[in-house]
Length: 128
Image (tube, rainbow, N blue to C red; front, side, top):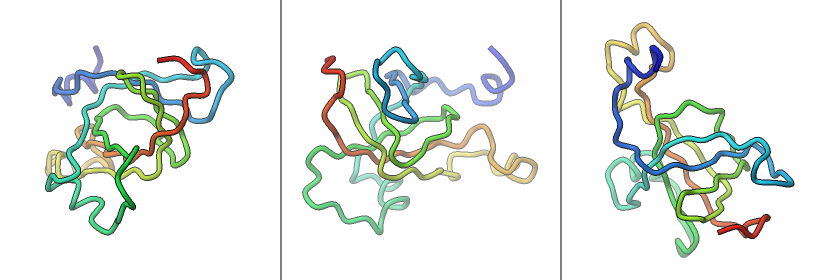
């Protein structure tokens, strides 16, 4: 437990995933663990952050929300707890979740949440 845990005591994200900045030869190499929850594409937050995005059919697409600070990048990979493997296609920072007073002091407060749009890709390791 450190200052970030005290400043952002939310524990609503219960599912865990692994973030891979690039494709690796093994799932044991370079994975960074984070917690998340799925985002409903019909929710107000999703429409606000990704309102200008039109998906073709929505098949294989997903969006998650997390407050874990990692260097999320387009083209990186995420292995979710339910065994699916995704590639990140877009990431947005949701500043609405941050404390407004903290935004006066910090450029990115610790309580912001990241909303990540992903598309499902074949698992290179074949692990479920």
